[in-house]
Each structure stands twice: as C-alpha cells, then as structure tokens.
Image 1 (cartoon, rainbow, N blue to C red):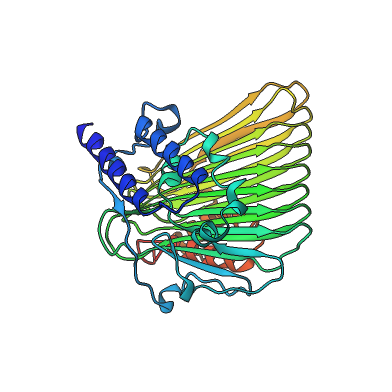
Image 2: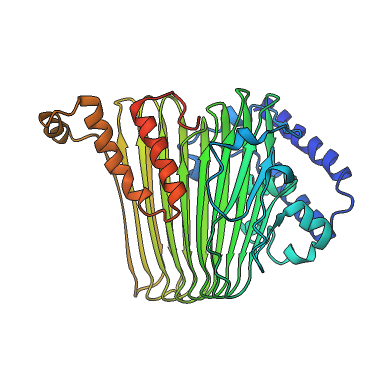
Length: 441
C-alpha cells in the first residue's frame, strides 16, 4: 500500500508538470481536469474490496509508476495490418497524439473529423457542451484520470440529417518505446438529429515493453440518430488496457456498440448508457477471447431513464489456458421508465479446466410495467458434437475449433462493417488454430 501511495504522488507530480504546459487551455477545461485529478487522488486505484472490482485485482497495474508516454515514431508500413480498406476518414494517433502524416481525410461535406487538441486550441467552445460533461458524473477513477491527463484524441460531429456512408476509422497505437508509460486517448462523437454514421476505434500496441492505454469515449446521440460504434482492443500481451465508453441518447435514437477484446494482459472495459428520452434503443454486443494468464473484465450499465426504451445486451467469452474473465452487467429501470423492454445475456465457453469466469447479470427495476430478462451461462465444448464431427473425418483439434467459432460467430454476424467482421473472424480462427500465442499480432 505504501508503494501504491508513492505512485499516486507520481501522478500528482505529472499533473502539475503538465499543467504548466497547458496555460492556454480554457478555464472550463482546466476546472474539469482539476476535478478529475482530485477524484483520482481521493479514490486511488480500486481494490477487490470495491464491489465492481471484486474479481479483478488491479495490483499489477497500481504498483507500476507509469509515466506519460513520449512522442513515438511510426511508419506507414506499421499500419498495414490495422488500417481497414475503407474510403472514409482515418485518423491515426501515436501514444495518444495525432499523427497527421499517417492520417487520411475524405473531405466529406459537413462531416467534422478533427484532432481534439487542434479543436481545443482553435475553437474550444465547440466541444465545451459535451466534452467530459457526462463522464464527470460517473464514479469512475479511470475516466477521471483520463480527463486530468488526455493530450489529444478525436472529435467527430455528424450534422443533422447527414448520412455518412463510409465508417470513420480511429487507430490508436502505443509504441511502448520506453517501459512503463501510459497514454490517455479521448474520443468525442456528437451525432445530430436524424443522422447516421459508423465509427471504428482500434487500439493496438508495438514492442515488448510494459505500457498502459487508458481510453475514454463519449457518444452523444441526437433525436432519431443511428450510430454503430465498434471498439476493437488488440493490445500486446505486455499491455494494460482500461476503456470507458459513455453513451447519452435522445428520443428515438439507436446506438449499437461492439466491444471486441482480443489482446492485453489485464483489460477492463466499462460501458455506461443513459436512455434519456422516450423510445431510445441501445444494443451492446461483446466478444472476448483470452488465453494463457490474460484477464478481461467487462462491465456494462444501461440506465432506462424514460418510457418506451429498448435495450439488448449479448456478451460472449472464450477462455483458454489459465485465463480469467469477468462480466458484470446491469440494467436500471427508473420509476418513470414504463414500457421498458430490456434483455441481457452473457455466455461463456471454457476451453481449459484451468480457465475461470465470474459473471453477474443484474436488474434494478423501479417501474411496474416492463419486460426485462437476464441470464448467464458457463460451459465447455460438447464432446458429443466433437464426436459427431470426428465421425465425419474431421480431426479432434479442428472439430473443437469449428464448434468454438460457431459459438463466437453469433457476435461477429452482428457487426455490419464487413472489413472489421472479416478481420476479427480471421484473427479468431488463427487464435483457435494456435498460430502464435498473441492474438493481436
């Protein structure tokens, strides 16, 4: 505990040093940063005594005195495996900083895709209404730490009634040139009334040094907006990853977010959704595949604040080796949220007798005219199905791989962005075949 306390002082010193370089930032942002740092300093890293971290031991993360990552060097050829062949905008960030020479702008009329640092320095008032306004209300120390430290990120604004055909790509690369460094990427997506768009976030790592990516995404969906958000996490096995997604929805909006976790040594994914007007709809899907001693923790919370809201959650996990996983999903139905329809499901497949999953679906219902269901399953490969496939001439290992893929394919089929779906499918098949011990490679 003494070591952890000393590391908190390291973060405080880094914050003071960074503050001297941000003298030109607007007052409202400086206040948000100070509040975020104060929140983190007071709470520190959560321990297993915190109910929401009961099954996730953050000691390996907390005991390291991470320093802000420096400006890394990246060449175009490094991006080959991670840049999807799409015609839309593609912004690349290296160690949390915008890399203009590696990025691509489509010039789509009306669509605003920009570096957050650039926007803050040129027109900070344009993001003041939404940036950090929703996450500030959450009791999440990692979101608070991101607010205190983020240097850059992406701002995406979709105008009213705009239909953006090509997904926007955001690629966040941690070079890990030095050991024990951290970056804090930030994403703000604001979708106007009757708009439609898709956004891909791709988190990847290079090198073998220990590093940490602490990312925050805020999505604000206007009335009748349609947003598909795909978050692909494929950090190196030496990397830590904490990600927080906050979604705020208006009337008749529909937001779908896919969480695809394929890498990292210790991973925590948080998704908070507020259906803050009538007839809003939210769809959350997740797929996590871990092996060896990887640990992944997925926490979701959908808050039905107004009537006639609909939400669907389906998370699936595949665990091998000595890996561990956590799913903690919550549905909240407020007293005024009558006619709510909410479904939550978590299904897990254990490929090893040593793998372990802790799953905890929750319902908190304060309305009486609702339809809500939740459930969780944990199982192993059906050996009778394996025997059937083997009787048709399929090898034992291939039969297990086919059945495992069939289990996970239900999630992939829900991703409408074809290049992403095909990419994850190929990664998963390689993972099942045992081609390399690091799925993110």
